[in-house]
Picture 1 (tube, helix red, strand yellow):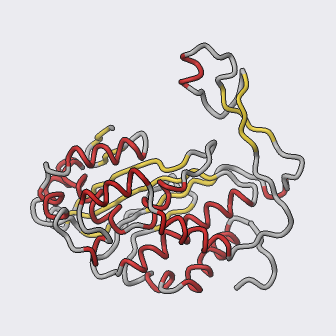
Picture 2 (cartoon, rainbow, N blue to C red):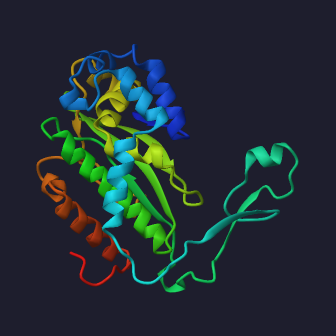
Length: 281
């Protein structure tokens, strides 16, 4: 974990969930969120939210699978395959290196079936889970399912994707932003369905887990936590190829039903040059 100004950055999803659990009794916002209603957070308690965050959310996985099943790519496209070698550009496996294995470097090789025309640079997707208070849980879930299905489809189409949470809130009293960054998926690794399902889809990721971290986000976060959780910021990170902004009344219609969410995924795939079977709409 690293704090720089009003920006709290974690090295992994697991670290963030553990830190939120450790601090859940230490901030005014966290104490309040432990007692929030199921209608607002999707869980009966902070303990239930933490259990789902660590063990996975079966309903969320089913929602992602249902959304992904609606997206059909033409032909058979096999994703680039990771493997271990003595050299490679995908990073080092610390565990393998520590026990002396020479094949401790992540590398990539193309399957014979890979459509090279759809290969390209790594796509960095930043997801802001901030949600306006009046947005219902069903809309939050549909947006998350759409984003997760987009990641699956991009990788099925031969693109590598890096996925990161960028929770950006605004302190209404001081006029400053505070931010939480949590990596969810590296470009050289497969998505973890349990983590993705909870982190992207479940209302408690924002309304319990991330709210419990509000007071840890420097002076702006601490100040906001004394009376509220701040409002969703309009700030856009500059290092993302695609930024999924806060969910509010200006964009909630895009995820108001399955058909709208599916159309959103198809539009984003088109933005990155990934085609789908004709007839999808």
